[in-house]
Length: 145
Image (cartoon, rainbow, N blue to C red; front, side, top):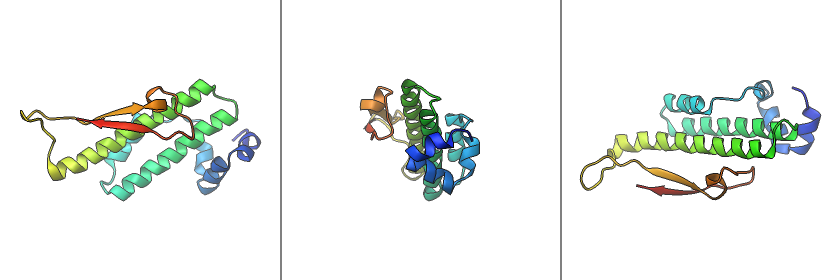
């Protein structure tokens, strides 16, 4: 991978992630289909710890990919913020779908007083809601039925 000298000295996280998982370097040029990656996690083992491990691996891969593009001058600030926000959105949707699947199997589908199925709505506030999430941002979520 080109530009290692432009990236590793400036990001301990990226250097350590690539040392831990050498395949990351070879996949950095491939922008993943985040929706397909989320679907693959949902189609896997329904075990929560395995799901969470897969989500953490996907998060690390995406953060490394986005940071690499940022540090190697391959992406504008707007692109970086958009990519971070898009990944957070997809990760939230994937986690919500996983939780809903398990909870509805145990407790049933939430329903209104008139019996209509109710879908949980998740609203991203602040930088996530504005599509301006950065590497150190936390996410503020509101959950509504």
